[in-house]
Length: 488
Image 1: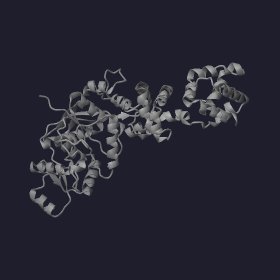
Image 2: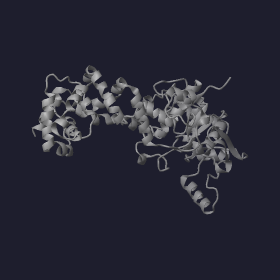
Image 3: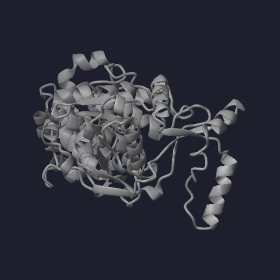
């Protein structure tokens, strides 16, 4: 019978959810989904100085927004909790006592000053600068005497000196071998009683029965140390799969200088969670090397560790924006209005009641704007003139070029006369048919005529399609706008 698949995403709440962390979470989630396993969320908040409840809440919110729901963890609970590291201190103490009983650890009384002095001497002599194990063979009497004297000490893991290397098979990078000469008896408990990362992460993974550790390759250097902790605990090793880092377009590690790096920011900017999910999945994994647009179902059905690339992925904001526009085009009018509503409310362009009462009107905006946007946050700027009633703000340059001219005045008067006709049906086709007669009637180029009307209606020379806009604005408001600018 195969081992149960149990994977975890273990963010540190020292900031919001980074794009790299989101990809790691997605790969863990997709792997569990495909194989019927368990996806666990564990909050690693042992860095008490920088970890905050606000960051934890934001990480949880971002994961939910991406659709990466967990089977065990905060809010969900589970049989292997607590799922927040700061609440697991008794478990770390219990395992440490077991390691003491099996003599897999020892106290080290070397002061930081002494260790630093030894390190500097080793550097000057071009020798190994790791801990020299000077406290490893202290007698029980010496240890007791120092302890009774209240001498500060740490606890170090006692590595097997007879071993030559730490060897493991990484599911992405293949066989990896690290000479034991590169490892020292590292600290697992500090003088202040706090455990170190390489210790607690192993205790958590062992007690939570994690089968696969899928994480960024910045943890690759930690893996040999962690294997030593697993072995000291007498626990089987999980499968390790390290993901190559995500780079910016300049080939350097993705950071704020490349633009937004947190999931929260992309949500605020109006990216769709399905689009970001799709894009993140492709940052290091592929279905067949060609397919770009994929549903969550397709990704999870085919996700596998053997198709994860060893090469770093490059984050391309333009490609993400293109992909988001594709998803916007495919979502349909009703879903668009639902996704757009928070932005309308935020900018005060409409209330929820107004949107509900005029649902079909708001849906009519969708085909006009969707080809002209890449994110939902761009919509309001392009459509605000549709919702401004009888008054529209005029762009100064557009006004000067199109309205403050003799031709502009003639166009506006003729336009008013045509549109005031009581027999004119107020729909796109009728409005266009009537206004198309103006260029010949006035002896002006169509561009001059329609640009003038566009500025009077929208306030700018650039807008959504003119005739469709006029239908949505309504006859009364359109006439009021034209009258206002023609009388200036």
